[in-house]
Length: 539
Image 1: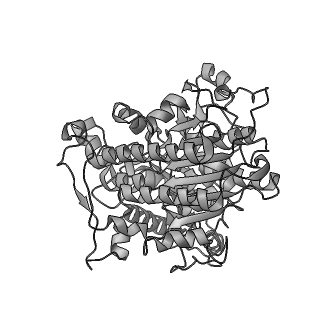
Image 2: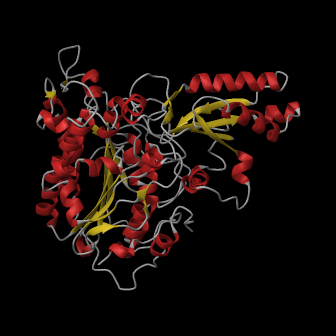
Image 3: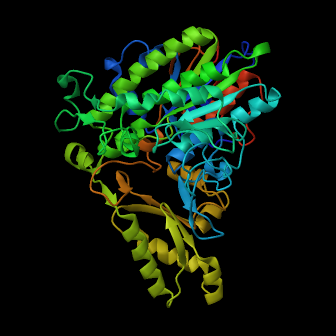
Protein backbone atom coordinates (compact mmCIF):
# COMPACT_ATOMS: atom_id res chain seq x y z
CA UNK A 1 0.00 0.00 0.00
CA UNK A 2 1.27 3.48 -0.79
CA UNK A 3 2.23 5.63 2.18
CA UNK A 4 1.08 9.21 1.73
CA UNK A 5 3.65 10.89 3.94
CA UNK A 6 4.66 12.93 0.88
CA UNK A 7 1.38 14.80 0.69
CA UNK A 8 -0.51 17.51 2.49
CA UNK A 9 -3.58 15.99 4.14
CA UNK A 10 -5.98 17.66 1.71
CA UNK A 11 -4.21 16.09 -1.24
CA UNK A 12 -3.85 12.73 0.48
CA UNK A 13 -7.61 12.34 0.63
CA UNK A 14 -7.86 13.09 -3.09
CA UNK A 15 -4.96 10.82 -4.00
CA UNK A 16 -6.51 7.92 -2.10
CA UNK A 17 -9.51 7.81 -4.46
CA UNK A 18 -10.85 4.34 -5.03
CA UNK A 19 -10.86 2.88 -8.51
CA UNK A 20 -13.74 4.18 -10.65
CA UNK A 21 -17.05 2.42 -10.03
CA UNK A 22 -18.27 2.61 -13.61
CA UNK A 23 -17.09 0.07 -16.15
CA UNK A 24 -14.55 1.52 -18.60
CA UNK A 25 -15.17 1.69 -22.32
CA UNK A 26 -14.07 -1.16 -24.53
CA UNK A 27 -10.33 -1.63 -24.33
CA UNK A 28 -8.17 0.33 -26.79
CA UNK A 29 -6.72 -1.53 -29.74
CA UNK A 30 -3.22 -0.29 -28.94
CA UNK A 31 -1.57 1.11 -25.82
CA UNK A 32 1.57 3.12 -26.56
CA UNK A 33 3.76 3.72 -23.51
CA UNK A 34 6.47 6.30 -24.16
CA UNK A 35 9.38 7.09 -21.85
CA UNK A 36 11.59 10.07 -22.67
CA UNK A 37 14.86 9.22 -20.98
CA UNK A 38 16.06 11.97 -18.66
CA UNK A 39 13.19 14.43 -19.10
CA UNK A 40 12.37 16.60 -16.06
CA UNK A 41 8.81 17.87 -15.76
CA UNK A 42 10.04 21.46 -15.60
CA UNK A 43 11.57 21.22 -19.07
CA UNK A 44 8.26 20.17 -20.59
CA UNK A 45 6.55 23.25 -19.16
CA UNK A 46 9.41 25.73 -19.59
CA UNK A 47 9.25 25.55 -23.39
CA UNK A 48 5.51 25.11 -23.74
CA UNK A 49 5.02 28.32 -25.76
CA UNK A 50 7.46 27.10 -28.41
CA UNK A 51 5.84 23.74 -29.18
CA UNK A 52 3.96 23.05 -32.37
CA UNK A 53 0.38 21.81 -32.36
CA UNK A 54 0.68 18.06 -32.56
CA UNK A 55 3.32 16.89 -30.06
CA UNK A 56 3.71 17.99 -26.44
CA UNK A 57 1.01 20.63 -26.91
CA UNK A 58 -1.46 17.97 -28.04
CA UNK A 59 -0.60 15.84 -25.03
CA UNK A 60 -1.05 18.78 -22.66
CA UNK A 61 -4.26 20.02 -24.30
CA UNK A 62 -5.96 16.72 -25.05
CA UNK A 63 -4.49 14.55 -22.30
CA UNK A 64 -4.72 14.22 -18.55
CA UNK A 65 -1.44 15.46 -17.17
CA UNK A 66 -0.11 15.54 -13.64
CA UNK A 67 2.33 18.32 -12.84
CA UNK A 68 3.02 16.79 -9.42
CA UNK A 69 4.02 13.34 -10.65
CA UNK A 70 7.11 11.52 -9.42
CA UNK A 71 9.37 8.56 -9.83
CA UNK A 72 8.83 7.88 -6.14
CA UNK A 73 11.98 6.00 -5.20
CA UNK A 74 15.37 7.23 -4.11
CA UNK A 75 17.70 5.91 -6.84
CA UNK A 76 16.50 7.77 -9.93
CA UNK A 77 18.37 6.12 -12.78
CA UNK A 78 17.36 4.66 -16.13
CA UNK A 79 16.88 1.00 -15.23
CA UNK A 80 14.97 1.69 -12.03
CA UNK A 81 12.70 4.26 -13.64
CA UNK A 82 11.88 2.15 -16.68
CA UNK A 83 11.06 -0.81 -14.45
CA UNK A 84 8.59 1.24 -12.41
CA UNK A 85 6.52 2.18 -15.47
CA UNK A 86 4.91 -1.16 -16.30
CA UNK A 87 5.50 -3.15 -13.11
CA UNK A 88 3.87 -0.56 -10.86
CA UNK A 89 6.44 -1.64 -8.27
CA UNK A 90 9.26 -0.02 -6.33
CA UNK A 91 12.83 -1.41 -6.34
CA UNK A 92 12.35 -3.06 -2.96
CA UNK A 93 10.10 -5.50 -4.81
CA UNK A 94 11.19 -5.56 -8.44
CA UNK A 95 14.89 -5.93 -7.63
CA UNK A 96 16.30 -3.57 -10.26
CA UNK A 97 18.09 -1.31 -7.79
CA UNK A 98 20.40 0.53 -10.21
CA UNK A 99 21.86 0.31 -13.70
CA UNK A 100 24.73 -1.63 -12.14
CA UNK A 101 25.14 -3.19 -8.73
CA UNK A 102 27.32 -5.75 -6.95
CA UNK A 103 26.55 -9.46 -7.07
CA UNK A 104 26.89 -10.66 -3.48
CA UNK A 105 27.79 -14.18 -4.59
CA UNK A 106 30.85 -13.07 -6.56
CA UNK A 107 31.57 -9.57 -5.27
CA UNK A 108 31.68 -8.36 -8.88
CA UNK A 109 29.70 -5.61 -10.56
CA UNK A 110 26.80 -6.75 -12.72
CA UNK A 111 24.58 -4.95 -15.22
CA UNK A 112 20.81 -4.83 -14.77
CA UNK A 113 19.91 -6.73 -17.97
CA UNK A 114 23.02 -8.80 -18.61
CA UNK A 115 22.48 -12.50 -19.18
CA UNK A 116 25.33 -14.52 -20.61
CA UNK A 117 22.93 -17.29 -21.60
CA UNK A 118 21.70 -15.11 -24.49
CA UNK A 119 23.23 -13.18 -27.39
CA UNK A 120 22.16 -10.41 -29.73
CA UNK A 121 20.89 -11.72 -33.05
CA UNK A 122 23.43 -11.03 -35.78
CA UNK A 123 25.43 -8.62 -33.61
CA UNK A 124 28.54 -8.74 -31.45
CA UNK A 125 27.64 -9.44 -27.82
CA UNK A 126 29.86 -8.64 -24.85
CA UNK A 127 29.46 -10.49 -21.52
CA UNK A 128 27.84 -7.49 -19.81
CA UNK A 129 25.51 -6.49 -22.66
CA UNK A 130 21.81 -6.38 -21.87
CA UNK A 131 20.08 -9.37 -23.43
CA UNK A 132 17.22 -10.45 -21.12
CA UNK A 133 15.01 -9.54 -18.12
CA UNK A 134 16.44 -12.36 -15.98
CA UNK A 135 17.13 -10.03 -13.04
CA UNK A 136 13.62 -8.56 -13.02
CA UNK A 137 11.87 -10.16 -10.03
CA UNK A 138 8.25 -9.25 -10.87
CA UNK A 139 5.92 -9.27 -13.85
CA UNK A 140 4.68 -6.33 -15.94
CA UNK A 141 1.44 -5.06 -17.38
CA UNK A 142 2.38 -6.65 -20.70
CA UNK A 143 2.94 -10.00 -19.02
CA UNK A 144 -0.51 -9.80 -17.43
CA UNK A 145 -2.07 -8.87 -20.76
CA UNK A 146 -0.36 -11.77 -22.51
CA UNK A 147 -1.60 -14.12 -19.80
CA UNK A 148 -5.16 -12.77 -19.89
CA UNK A 149 -5.42 -13.13 -23.67
CA UNK A 150 -3.81 -16.53 -24.02
CA UNK A 151 -0.72 -14.84 -25.50
CA UNK A 152 -2.78 -13.42 -28.37
CA UNK A 153 -1.88 -9.87 -27.34
CA UNK A 154 1.43 -8.63 -28.70
CA UNK A 155 3.80 -6.74 -26.44
CA UNK A 156 6.85 -5.10 -28.01
CA UNK A 157 9.34 -2.48 -26.84
CA UNK A 158 12.06 -0.53 -28.64
CA UNK A 159 14.75 1.76 -27.24
CA UNK A 160 18.10 3.33 -27.89
CA UNK A 161 19.26 1.51 -24.73
CA UNK A 162 18.93 -2.21 -24.07
CA UNK A 163 17.62 -1.64 -20.53
CA UNK A 164 15.02 0.79 -21.83
CA UNK A 165 13.54 -1.86 -24.12
CA UNK A 166 14.00 -4.98 -22.00
CA UNK A 167 12.48 -3.58 -18.80
CA UNK A 168 9.43 -2.25 -20.66
CA UNK A 169 8.93 -5.52 -22.57
CA UNK A 170 8.83 -7.58 -19.38
CA UNK A 171 9.17 -11.36 -19.22
CA UNK A 172 6.97 -12.32 -22.18
CA UNK A 173 7.13 -9.35 -24.53
CA UNK A 174 9.80 -8.72 -27.18
CA UNK A 175 12.56 -6.12 -26.92
CA UNK A 176 14.55 -4.45 -29.68
CA UNK A 177 17.50 -2.18 -28.94
CA UNK A 178 19.91 0.06 -30.81
CA UNK A 179 23.29 -1.49 -31.58
CA UNK A 180 25.94 1.19 -31.29
CA UNK A 181 28.48 -0.66 -33.43
CA UNK A 182 26.20 -1.05 -36.47
CA UNK A 183 23.29 1.34 -35.98
CA UNK A 184 20.83 -1.55 -36.30
CA UNK A 185 17.95 -2.34 -33.99
CA UNK A 186 18.22 -5.95 -32.89
CA UNK A 187 16.72 -8.39 -30.41
CA UNK A 188 18.34 -11.27 -28.54
CA UNK A 189 18.06 -15.04 -28.40
CA UNK A 190 16.02 -14.72 -25.20
CA UNK A 191 13.11 -13.63 -27.41
CA UNK A 192 13.74 -15.50 -30.68
CA UNK A 193 16.41 -17.24 -32.71
CA UNK A 194 15.95 -15.19 -35.89
CA UNK A 195 14.52 -11.78 -36.65
CA UNK A 196 11.19 -11.68 -38.49
CA UNK A 197 11.19 -10.57 -42.12
CA UNK A 198 10.06 -7.02 -41.33
CA UNK A 199 13.10 -6.48 -39.07
CA UNK A 200 15.42 -7.85 -41.72
CA UNK A 201 13.92 -5.45 -44.28
CA UNK A 202 14.35 -2.54 -41.92
CA UNK A 203 18.00 -3.41 -41.31
CA UNK A 204 18.68 -3.88 -45.03
CA UNK A 205 17.42 -0.35 -45.71
CA UNK A 206 20.23 1.08 -43.49
CA UNK A 207 18.18 4.11 -42.34
CA UNK A 208 20.91 4.93 -39.81
CA UNK A 209 23.28 5.91 -42.62
CA UNK A 210 21.12 8.75 -43.94
CA UNK A 211 22.46 11.13 -41.29
CA UNK A 212 26.11 10.71 -42.21
CA UNK A 213 27.67 14.12 -42.87
CA UNK A 214 24.66 16.00 -41.49
CA UNK A 215 24.96 18.72 -38.87
CA UNK A 216 22.54 19.25 -36.02
CA UNK A 217 21.90 22.99 -35.86
CA UNK A 218 19.34 25.00 -33.88
CA UNK A 219 15.80 24.66 -35.17
CA UNK A 220 14.64 27.98 -33.69
CA UNK A 221 15.82 31.56 -34.06
CA UNK A 222 18.87 32.44 -31.96
CA UNK A 223 16.75 34.72 -29.75
CA UNK A 224 14.64 31.76 -28.65
CA UNK A 225 17.58 30.38 -26.69
CA UNK A 226 18.53 33.64 -24.95
CA UNK A 227 17.32 32.50 -21.53
CA UNK A 228 19.45 29.37 -21.54
CA UNK A 229 23.01 28.85 -20.39
CA UNK A 230 25.75 31.06 -21.80
CA UNK A 231 27.62 29.79 -24.82
CA UNK A 232 27.65 29.98 -28.61
CA UNK A 233 24.88 28.60 -30.76
CA UNK A 234 25.86 25.01 -31.39
CA UNK A 235 26.55 22.93 -34.48
CA UNK A 236 27.07 19.19 -33.96
CA UNK A 237 28.19 17.12 -36.95
CA UNK A 238 27.80 13.39 -37.52
CA UNK A 239 30.82 11.76 -39.13
CA UNK A 240 33.61 9.28 -38.50
CA UNK A 241 37.37 9.38 -38.74
CA UNK A 242 37.25 6.73 -41.47
CA UNK A 243 35.18 8.93 -43.79
CA UNK A 244 32.27 6.48 -43.95
CA UNK A 245 29.58 5.16 -41.56
CA UNK A 246 31.26 2.99 -38.95
CA UNK A 247 31.11 2.24 -35.22
CA UNK A 248 32.42 5.69 -34.34
CA UNK A 249 29.64 7.32 -36.34
CA UNK A 250 26.93 5.04 -34.93
CA UNK A 251 28.03 5.81 -31.37
CA UNK A 252 28.02 9.53 -32.18
CA UNK A 253 24.42 9.26 -33.44
CA UNK A 254 23.25 8.54 -29.87
CA UNK A 255 23.95 12.11 -28.73
CA UNK A 256 21.25 13.99 -30.58
CA UNK A 257 17.82 13.89 -32.21
CA UNK A 258 18.54 11.34 -34.91
CA UNK A 259 18.60 8.39 -32.49
CA UNK A 260 15.03 9.23 -31.46
CA UNK A 261 14.00 9.63 -35.09
CA UNK A 262 15.37 6.18 -35.86
CA UNK A 263 13.61 4.72 -32.81
CA UNK A 264 10.25 6.10 -33.93
CA UNK A 265 10.87 4.84 -37.48
CA UNK A 266 11.49 1.37 -36.06
CA UNK A 267 8.32 1.68 -33.97
CA UNK A 268 6.35 2.41 -37.15
CA UNK A 269 7.91 -0.62 -38.81
CA UNK A 270 6.94 -2.74 -35.80
CA UNK A 271 3.34 -1.55 -35.88
CA UNK A 272 3.08 -2.52 -39.53
CA UNK A 273 5.25 -5.64 -39.40
CA UNK A 274 3.51 -7.11 -36.35
CA UNK A 275 0.07 -5.71 -37.13
CA UNK A 276 -0.11 -3.97 -33.76
CA UNK A 277 -3.56 -2.59 -33.05
CA UNK A 278 -5.24 -4.92 -35.52
CA UNK A 279 -5.63 -8.04 -33.39
CA UNK A 280 -8.89 -9.97 -34.01
CA UNK A 281 -11.68 -10.12 -31.44
CA UNK A 282 -10.63 -6.80 -29.94
CA UNK A 283 -7.46 -8.10 -28.29
CA UNK A 284 -5.30 -5.06 -27.43
CA UNK A 285 -1.55 -4.76 -27.99
CA UNK A 286 1.12 -2.83 -26.09
CA UNK A 287 4.01 -0.92 -27.66
CA UNK A 288 6.72 0.48 -25.40
CA UNK A 289 8.95 3.21 -26.83
CA UNK A 290 11.91 4.55 -24.88
CA UNK A 291 13.48 7.64 -26.46
CA UNK A 292 17.04 7.69 -25.18
CA UNK A 293 18.73 10.71 -26.74
CA UNK A 294 17.55 13.40 -24.32
CA UNK A 295 19.42 11.64 -21.53
CA UNK A 296 22.66 11.61 -23.51
CA UNK A 297 22.28 15.31 -24.36
CA UNK A 298 21.50 16.31 -20.77
CA UNK A 299 24.43 14.31 -19.42
CA UNK A 300 26.83 16.00 -21.81
CA UNK A 301 25.54 19.57 -21.67
CA UNK A 302 22.98 19.90 -18.87
CA UNK A 303 19.20 20.43 -19.05
CA UNK A 304 19.75 24.20 -19.07
CA UNK A 305 21.79 24.03 -22.29
CA UNK A 306 20.83 25.25 -25.75
CA UNK A 307 21.34 21.72 -27.07
CA UNK A 308 18.90 20.25 -24.55
CA UNK A 309 16.41 23.01 -25.33
CA UNK A 310 16.64 22.36 -29.06
CA UNK A 311 16.53 18.61 -28.70
CA UNK A 312 13.20 18.91 -26.90
CA UNK A 313 11.85 21.10 -29.69
CA UNK A 314 12.90 18.54 -32.27
CA UNK A 315 11.39 15.75 -30.19
CA UNK A 316 8.15 17.73 -30.06
CA UNK A 317 7.98 17.69 -33.88
CA UNK A 318 8.80 13.98 -33.97
CA UNK A 319 5.98 13.21 -31.53
CA UNK A 320 3.56 15.23 -33.64
CA UNK A 321 4.45 13.16 -36.69
CA UNK A 322 4.17 9.90 -34.77
CA UNK A 323 0.76 10.74 -33.28
CA UNK A 324 -0.49 11.72 -36.74
CA UNK A 325 0.73 8.35 -38.01
CA UNK A 326 -1.14 6.55 -35.21
CA UNK A 327 -4.32 8.48 -36.05
CA UNK A 328 -4.20 7.17 -39.60
CA UNK A 329 -2.80 3.69 -39.01
CA UNK A 330 -4.66 2.63 -35.84
CA UNK A 331 -7.47 5.19 -35.67
CA UNK A 332 -7.62 8.38 -33.64
CA UNK A 333 -10.24 6.89 -31.30
CA UNK A 334 -8.63 3.49 -30.91
CA UNK A 335 -5.37 4.00 -29.05
CA UNK A 336 -4.05 5.39 -25.78
CA UNK A 337 -0.70 7.12 -25.32
CA UNK A 338 1.03 7.40 -21.97
CA UNK A 339 4.09 9.64 -21.82
CA UNK A 340 6.43 9.78 -18.86
CA UNK A 341 10.16 9.71 -18.03
CA UNK A 342 12.46 7.40 -16.13
CA UNK A 343 13.99 10.26 -14.14
CA UNK A 344 14.58 13.99 -14.15
CA UNK A 345 17.90 15.83 -14.11
CA UNK A 346 19.95 18.22 -12.04
CA UNK A 347 21.49 21.27 -13.66
CA UNK A 348 25.24 21.24 -14.11
CA UNK A 349 27.08 22.24 -10.96
CA UNK A 350 28.60 25.21 -12.81
CA UNK A 351 25.18 26.54 -13.80
CA UNK A 352 23.77 26.01 -10.31
CA UNK A 353 26.61 27.97 -8.73
CA UNK A 354 26.92 30.77 -11.28
CA UNK A 355 23.31 31.31 -12.31
CA UNK A 356 21.33 30.14 -9.28
CA UNK A 357 23.83 30.90 -6.50
CA UNK A 358 23.40 27.39 -5.12
CA UNK A 359 26.06 25.34 -3.39
CA UNK A 360 26.73 22.54 -5.88
CA UNK A 361 29.53 20.22 -6.88
CA UNK A 362 30.70 16.71 -7.69
CA UNK A 363 31.98 13.95 -5.43
CA UNK A 364 34.59 11.70 -7.02
CA UNK A 365 33.19 8.19 -6.37
CA UNK A 366 36.53 6.40 -6.64
CA UNK A 367 38.26 8.72 -4.19
CA UNK A 368 35.30 8.54 -1.80
CA UNK A 369 35.26 4.74 -1.67
CA UNK A 370 39.04 4.45 -1.50
CA UNK A 371 39.15 6.96 1.35
CA UNK A 372 36.44 5.10 3.24
CA UNK A 373 38.21 1.76 2.72
CA UNK A 374 41.48 3.14 4.10
CA UNK A 375 39.70 4.64 7.10
CA UNK A 376 37.87 1.42 7.95
CA UNK A 377 40.97 -0.71 7.51
CA UNK A 378 42.84 1.51 9.94
CA UNK A 379 39.92 1.58 12.36
CA UNK A 380 39.50 -2.20 12.46
CA UNK A 381 43.16 -3.25 12.72
CA UNK A 382 43.75 -4.25 9.12
CA UNK A 383 40.37 -5.86 8.48
CA UNK A 384 38.87 -4.59 5.22
CA UNK A 385 35.06 -4.46 5.61
CA UNK A 386 34.33 -3.33 2.02
CA UNK A 387 34.16 -5.94 -0.71
CA UNK A 388 33.06 -3.60 -3.52
CA UNK A 389 30.98 -0.55 -4.34
CA UNK A 390 28.81 0.84 -7.12
CA UNK A 391 27.61 4.14 -5.73
CA UNK A 392 25.31 4.90 -4.13
CA UNK A 393 25.66 1.28 -2.89
CA UNK A 394 28.61 0.07 -0.81
CA UNK A 395 28.85 -3.63 0.07
CA UNK A 396 30.48 -5.22 3.11
CA UNK A 397 32.52 -8.42 3.12
CA UNK A 398 30.40 -10.08 5.80
CA UNK A 399 32.38 -13.36 5.89
CA UNK A 400 35.58 -11.35 6.53
CA UNK A 401 33.87 -9.42 9.33
CA UNK A 402 32.56 -12.63 10.90
CA UNK A 403 35.99 -14.26 10.71
CA UNK A 404 37.61 -11.26 12.40
CA UNK A 405 34.87 -10.94 14.99
CA UNK A 406 33.98 -7.41 13.89
CA UNK A 407 30.35 -6.43 14.41
CA UNK A 408 28.49 -4.98 11.44
CA UNK A 409 26.88 -2.28 13.61
CA UNK A 410 30.33 -0.99 14.54
CA UNK A 411 31.37 -0.84 10.88
CA UNK A 412 28.15 0.93 9.94
CA UNK A 413 28.72 3.54 12.64
CA UNK A 414 32.36 4.15 11.70
CA UNK A 415 31.58 4.32 8.00
CA UNK A 416 28.64 6.67 8.47
CA UNK A 417 30.61 9.03 10.68
CA UNK A 418 33.44 9.26 8.15
CA UNK A 419 31.17 9.66 5.13
CA UNK A 420 29.06 12.36 6.73
CA UNK A 421 32.22 14.38 7.33
CA UNK A 422 33.01 14.44 3.60
CA UNK A 423 32.13 17.40 1.40
CA UNK A 424 28.93 16.92 -0.55
CA UNK A 425 27.44 14.03 1.45
CA UNK A 426 23.99 14.52 2.99
CA UNK A 427 23.12 11.16 4.52
CA UNK A 428 24.09 7.51 4.81
CA UNK A 429 21.54 4.74 5.07
CA UNK A 430 22.77 1.53 6.66
CA UNK A 431 21.35 -1.97 6.44
CA UNK A 432 20.37 -1.74 10.10
CA UNK A 433 18.54 1.52 9.50
CA UNK A 434 16.65 0.04 6.55
CA UNK A 435 15.68 -3.03 8.54
CA UNK A 436 14.23 -1.05 11.44
CA UNK A 437 10.51 -1.75 11.52
CA UNK A 438 8.09 1.13 11.09
CA UNK A 439 10.75 3.82 10.95
CA UNK A 440 8.85 6.27 8.73
CA UNK A 441 10.38 9.71 8.67
CA UNK A 442 10.94 12.32 6.01
CA UNK A 443 9.94 12.14 2.36
CA UNK A 444 13.51 11.19 1.48
CA UNK A 445 13.49 8.42 4.09
CA UNK A 446 10.45 6.91 2.40
CA UNK A 447 11.95 7.14 -1.09
CA UNK A 448 15.21 5.57 0.05
CA UNK A 449 13.39 2.69 1.75
CA UNK A 450 11.47 2.02 -1.44
CA UNK A 451 14.75 1.97 -3.37
CA UNK A 452 16.47 -0.57 -1.11
CA UNK A 453 16.26 -4.29 -1.87
CA UNK A 454 17.34 -6.58 0.95
CA UNK A 455 19.51 -8.77 -1.26
CA UNK A 456 20.56 -6.64 -4.24
CA UNK A 457 21.25 -3.29 -2.56
CA UNK A 458 24.29 -2.30 -0.55
CA UNK A 459 24.96 -2.40 3.18
CA UNK A 460 25.44 1.35 2.89
CA UNK A 461 23.54 3.66 0.56
CA UNK A 462 25.10 7.11 0.28
CA UNK A 463 23.01 10.19 -0.54
CA UNK A 464 24.77 13.31 -1.86
CA UNK A 465 23.64 16.76 -0.82
CA UNK A 466 21.07 18.53 -3.00
CA UNK A 467 22.68 19.78 -6.24
CA UNK A 468 25.72 17.60 -5.60
CA UNK A 469 26.32 14.40 -7.55
CA UNK A 470 28.71 11.49 -7.89
CA UNK A 471 31.11 12.09 -10.74
CA UNK A 472 34.80 12.39 -11.48
CA UNK A 473 34.52 14.85 -14.36
CA UNK A 474 34.46 18.63 -14.47
CA UNK A 475 31.51 19.14 -16.81
CA UNK A 476 28.08 17.77 -17.64
CA UNK A 477 25.12 16.84 -15.46
CA UNK A 478 23.56 13.76 -13.94
CA UNK A 479 20.72 12.35 -11.83
CA UNK A 480 20.11 9.54 -9.36
CA UNK A 481 19.07 11.28 -6.15
CA UNK A 482 15.79 11.46 -4.18
CA UNK A 483 15.51 15.23 -4.72
CA UNK A 484 12.56 16.72 -6.60
CA UNK A 485 14.59 17.75 -9.66
CA UNK A 486 15.33 14.03 -10.19
CA UNK A 487 11.93 12.60 -9.20
CA UNK A 488 9.45 15.07 -10.77
CA UNK A 489 8.71 13.78 -14.28
CA UNK A 490 5.91 14.22 -16.83
CA UNK A 491 2.94 11.88 -16.53
CA UNK A 492 0.34 12.28 -19.28
CA UNK A 493 -2.45 9.98 -20.51
CA UNK A 494 -4.11 10.73 -23.86
CA UNK A 495 -7.02 8.86 -25.48
CA UNK A 496 -10.32 10.69 -25.77
CA UNK A 497 -12.59 7.64 -25.42
CA UNK A 498 -11.06 6.82 -22.05
CA UNK A 499 -9.29 9.89 -20.66
CA UNK A 500 -10.80 13.12 -19.35
CA UNK A 501 -8.40 15.92 -20.39
CA UNK A 502 -7.11 18.39 -17.87
CA UNK A 503 -4.31 19.54 -15.61
CA UNK A 504 -4.71 17.41 -12.48
CA UNK A 505 -3.43 18.78 -9.19
CA UNK A 506 -3.49 15.41 -7.43
CA UNK A 507 -0.21 13.84 -6.47
CA UNK A 508 0.64 10.91 -8.76
CA UNK A 509 3.46 8.44 -9.23
CA UNK A 510 4.86 6.60 -12.20
CA UNK A 511 3.86 3.35 -10.46
CA UNK A 512 0.23 4.45 -11.02
CA UNK A 513 0.57 3.81 -14.77
CA UNK A 514 0.39 0.01 -14.60
CA UNK A 515 -2.73 -0.28 -12.40
CA UNK A 516 -4.49 2.45 -14.38
CA UNK A 517 -3.80 0.72 -17.69
CA UNK A 518 -4.78 -2.63 -16.17
CA UNK A 519 -8.18 -1.15 -15.25
CA UNK A 520 -8.63 0.21 -18.76
CA UNK A 521 -7.62 -3.13 -20.30
CA UNK A 522 -9.92 -5.12 -17.97
CA UNK A 523 -7.07 -7.24 -16.60
CA UNK A 524 -5.49 -7.68 -13.20
CA UNK A 525 -2.53 -5.42 -12.35
CA UNK A 526 1.00 -6.83 -12.12
CA UNK A 527 1.62 -8.76 -8.91
CA UNK A 528 3.99 -6.20 -7.39
CA UNK A 529 2.01 -3.09 -8.33
CA UNK A 530 1.64 -0.59 -5.50
CA UNK A 531 0.21 2.31 -7.47
CA UNK A 532 -3.41 3.43 -7.65
CA UNK A 533 -5.88 3.74 -10.51
CA UNK A 534 -5.92 7.41 -11.53
CA UNK A 535 -9.70 7.39 -11.37
CA UNK A 536 -10.13 11.16 -11.45
CA UNK A 537 -8.76 11.20 -15.03
CA UNK A 538 -10.92 8.38 -16.36
CA UNK A 539 -14.09 9.09 -18.35
